[in-house]
Each structure stands twice: as C-alpha cells, then as structure tokens.
Length: 391
Image 1 (spheres, helix red, strand yellow):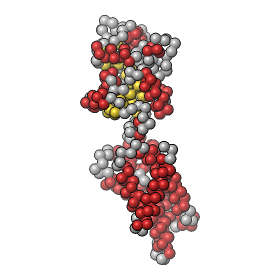
Image 2 (cartoon, one colour):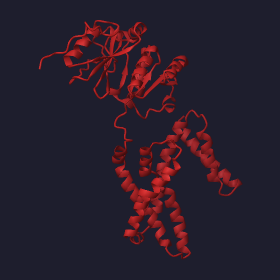
Image 3 (cartoon, helix red, strand yellow):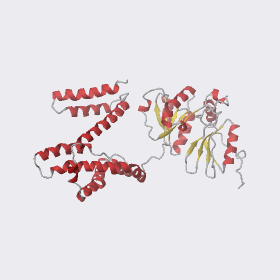
Image 4 (cartoon, rainbow, N blue to C red):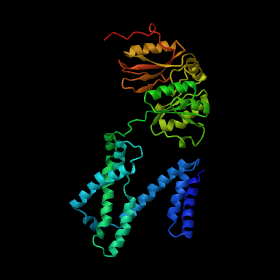
C-alpha cells in the first residue's frame, strides 16, 4: 500500500517513454489518455492517487515558475513599467478572464455567484508562462520587433493576478455569497428507523445529512425519504474516499452496536473535533452515573433500545416553544421522568440547531423564539410548566 504513489509515478514515466519510442512527441498525449482512462475507472485507491497528483503538481509547478522566472532580468521588467501594462492587466482580470469562465461554464449548472468567484480566483497561467518563455526567446533570436516584451509581460500578469486575486479571495467569496462560514452538515452512522427519523428532521431544517449503513434495505428506505444514503462499511479504509464531507461538520453515531459507535468517534474525531462528534451511550454507561462520556448523545439514560422503543410507539419529532431558561429546564425534568420523551435538539430563533448531549451541557440565554426539539410522545399541555413571569 505504501508503494502506491511510487508505482503509479513509475507507470506514468514508463508509458511516456514507451510511447515516445513508437511515435516521437507522443508521450504527453499517451499520459493524458492514461489519466482520463484511470479517472473513469472504479479504482479503490483513486482518491489517494488524486492527492498525490495534487501534491506533485504543486511542487512541479512551483519549480517551473522559479526556473522560468530566473530568465527575466530587472531590465526586462522596466520595459513594461508603464500605464499601458496596467490597463492590459485590468482588462485581463476584469474582462477577458471572466468572459472565458462564463463561456466555458455556460452549461455546467453553476450559479452566477459561483462563476464570478471562479473568474476571480481561476488558474494563474503556468501554461502561458511556459509558452511565453519558449516563443519569446525564439522570436528574440530571430530579431522580431517587440519580442522582448512577451515574457516579462506575461509574468507580470501572472504575478499581478496571484497578488491581487489570491489575497482577496476570502473577501470576494463572502461578497458573492460562496463562503462557507461553518460546516453545518451532519454525518449519521446507522440507518435504523431512529436514524431516519432524526435525519429527515435535519433535512427538513435545511441541514445537509449523509447517512451511512452497510444494510442496503435501510439505505434504500433513506433514499425513498429523499435522504442521501450510502451503503458502506464503517471499518473500511476507503470509506472517506467514497463520500464527500466538505460541508459536514458533525457526526452522530446512532447504531445499536456500541463498539461501532465508539469506532466511528475514533475514526472521525480528528476531522470533526471533540465538539462535533457524538454517539449513543451504551448500557454500561447508562447504568453508571459516574461514567458519563463527553460525546454522549441526548441524555445519560438514552441508549439505542430506549430510542427504538420510543420511536416504535411514537414515531414523530415535535417542537415545544420555549419562553425562558426556567421553562426549558422544567421540560427537561419532565423528559427525565418519561422514557417516551427524548430531547434531541435546541432550536434557536434563526433556525440553528444545537445538539443536546449527555454531558450535562447547560444552555444559557434561552428566551422567546427558542424551541425544544424532542422525539417520541408529545408533551401534554397540562404537564408542561409555565414560563416564569418574574422580571
């Protein structure tokens, strides 16, 4: 496995050399075709190869830029130190490159703001720099008038776009609305009835949800509900290669197997962090008040069996309007006395959902507009405590 990158690079070089033996200058074409074929194959380690390719590309392009720029003298840059160069730079950045992006993405399904962002932070021009260096030197050798401007002009454009676009990319992304402030998506391990019910609620509240289970029947039920379900084995090393988790920031392990839940925490905790990885407590933890894991979901007494029984009798998720902190605490006390009412989220007025954990996490500043999201039996109106009228 650790020889994967070395072997793949060796194969690329072999294909290049062998192709050149049969037809001069055909090596580059052969390697490109090879890449296209491999990219459309169902290779188990394709993502690792892509990461290796990206790392290698950054290294080689950086070296190439240094080698090409080494041929330019200060006197060459002084040739283009005028207003005409500045005007050309502005035309390329604000007109020519955006037009090229819009033409090449006209049938891609990208939104206007996404196209604008690509037009702003698009490719920097290593191909143009290489061609300019090659043809510029040859034209100068032939004595063509104006040939001395080609190479420094192209490098000035490349340098200018790197300095301008790269340093303003974050601000521009926020301005056009493509900046992801926080990954709010949720990865759900397990596709049981409980998981599907919770995942569907999250989806209906505009959260991206990915459900993983090795049971094809359960995943099929997820897809019928409009959920993104993936048949996968949590123990597979290639699991993260087959799913996109770019906007996923939380993990909820909801399987009936405590070992799988704990393994999922260990597998994804580095990616999601301690405050983003949660699992159901097991029976031993539930019966031991002193053993209260920080990553425990919901309350300390809510294991998979209890959730399953609650959903079997009352397959619904409800929202209870809150008035203040005392109201919230009163409802929580009611849930502790009723096995069929399980609090799962706290919903803010802006729609943001906070996961309720077993680690005695106290929410503060709860006021009007907040809602307690709970699973199972609906609160009886006579049971729910009234909000405090003091103050």
